[in-house]
Length: 126
Image (cartoon, rainbow, N blue to C red):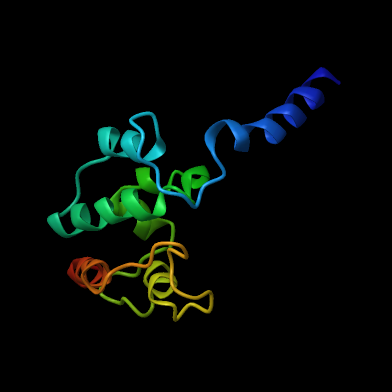
């Protein structure tokens, strides 16, 4: 019984305490800054993409630990198909061809940022 009450309170209060997402995170105590501290590795193409993920995706996708994913995580979880940007779920969501409109919704990627994702995916070996 007490566990149920606790979980109810946590699920009710947690969004208020950590923010509801979809806004820029620019505090030092945020998912974006934590990702910068703890993430790393991967190819230079991935590090360029990871910067965009941290800056433009983590504020909405903080609950999925998206900003903490490694290069291999994106592949293993099926978000990216090496050498196939149009066949990659992540890319199709970003460019709007995935049926949900371009992401991020409130801070669209620049052409250069989208190109960085394409370059990264093309650089991956199957």
